[in-house]
Length: 334
Image (tube, rainbow, N blue to C red; front, side, top):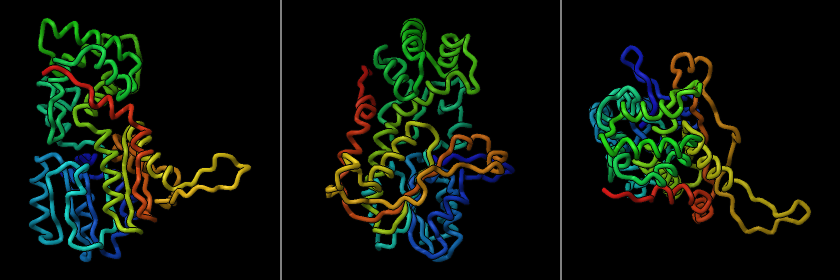
């Protein structure tokens, strides 16, 4: 799932230099790459002979890239075809885990494969499944109620025309099966007098992808399980690509690295334990050089935190984003 571009047959993971600097693989250890993709981060970490990488990805098609790396690095590399919310099922042989990486973009291969329906250029069946899914985008568009489609577009895409787009989808699907090309035309027809720097369908596609892949609950559970897996001193680093996932990561790191007072005039009597050390309060963004090489990296933000305690109650974190996880649970007739 790592966001990469192909340039002269090479793949460039977003913010690679910055991320490698943060996790410090120079000193050796085990690193967990939770969004393996085409292996850009994993390969860079494995260049240092004292390092091991455990890589996971829900997309089974990246197994070919994993096999290539396995041949080269043998017992220093392991790959699991699981979702990153399931990293707690991985049994580590030692407690030398130094860093856990998440790159929340989708891969160049996923976009270029027009049968998967991630691209606006696709004319195929709506898909958008990243792997290990319960349903496809086609089933959502064909069966979800107008009310629930509106909620998905409004909250996951932050689409201000959500209601009109949902209504038009329901009207058109009465007479024809809606494919990817049809969906982009529906959105264009609703937003025809609007002028945007991005494609008209960007927010709707984002919303559907989040819903189909349960990306909100995946991220929340992935972050919690990453914290529980790490020893004190370990680093969690996350690259986000849109405001919703960045808000989640920002809250997770910031809320559990600060002890807040109810009043500035009353001494802090909270027993709350800080769980992270934040060295950078602001996110790291791509350099001008990287933006020239890889324009899609413009929306990337890298945040990281160092674990400082084992306190593991995250009810407040889950509650903060319950409205979004509840929308992920919206049902539709299949």
